[in-house]
Length: 346
Ligand code: SF4
Image: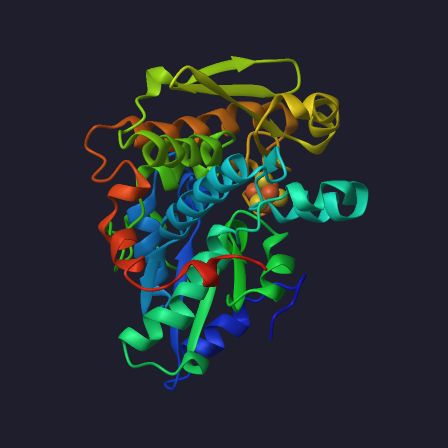
């Protein structure tokens, strides 16, 4: 049963032990750079392979990367932004993937309702894809497919009430489960994801500015047919937010990134300068989510910086197999179906 507050790990294990159910876990980017804190690794260590091995050891039948959902979000947000710009729609468009920000906007800024993107979050998108497309491709009854999202975010427990995702487990809850089951996390041999890879643009969704950069990469590609090189993105730090600008045909596309809702309030008087605004509730983004292992105030900023650097370096690494969402073969295959209506809230 979906619950906005409870620890749901025992219910997920019950589903895993039900032979009539297929239980898939989808993992958010920030978990892989936060889980190691509990097991004595250096802050921010990138432990994707051990995390997957632990989840397999717990009995999940498949482990998929929520970065696939992030790629869908980038594709849809860039398309929505482009349509708003061309059709005179409401601007600036605000991102919609942080449920704490969306709830805050609903209560404190109802006047921004039509500025918020209609896109579901990456968890919402991949869950709808799995329930509606993946089940057909694999001859599964959607009622027998159970989706658990592993996230750094307790607020996602509230968000999934309106999605196709069934359960949420936080990073800290997974760490407790690994200890309860006496799994030797440090000794685990790395394992790969089962399918539905995401691009490294999807991986940076876990850090402040990542959603913006990924969506701008898609926007630029839709407009020009080219890949957006990093040095064409002008990033300027202001007191309470950061501006991201790109130029297409001598037209400047000016955007803003803000983390922390008090900082958002400082940005709002200037919002009409921008066409697109990324908002995250947590300072630094999801790497600092409320479901991550915590640290003393003294250590917190250093740990968050390490987690951010770990995610962004995976995007800069030339060995990253796929960098741009539109180059992801799993995304190309997904769009061979009519999926766009599945990916929006209304
Ligand atoms: Fe959750 Fe914080 Fe990420 Fe928002 S920024 S989705 S509240 S972890």
